[in-house]
Image (cartoon, rainbow, N blue to C red; front, side):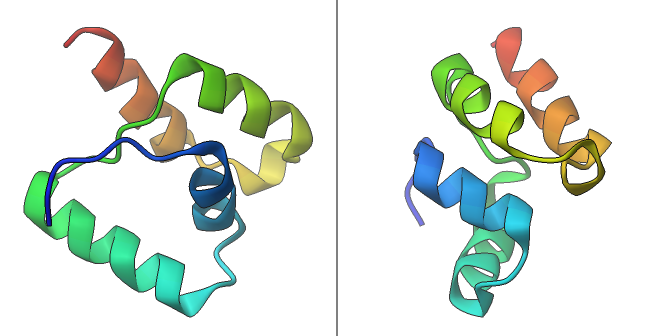
Length: 69
């Protein structure tokens, strides 16, 4: 898989953990690249809609890692 940045819709689906095809693709991407990458705007659009319980700390940790690159 090529390096990519997740758009709002895909990140939202990953966080929901319901679409098996999206999850399989995200897992494969993580195996190859060790992290998911998304923009600050995507995070802003997704997190306010998500309940605190549905956003795993690891998801926010990936964002924190990306800020320093």
